[in-house]
Length: 66
Image (cartoon, rainbow, N blue to C red; front, side, top):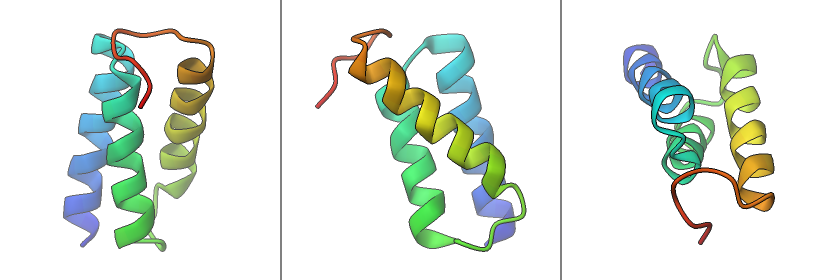
């Protein structure tokens, strides 16, 4: 469980930082939150989820909010 969550966090981080794909980053974070609420890096997951949500509300990024 921890290993899968770490992989999803790395993918979410790459979507967020490199591709500016905030919808995809948010979906990965939501998957971690729902599947492993005791994940050791939950603070980072919540940061990326919140920042992605904020940027989507400001119409930033390369994906349209859904």
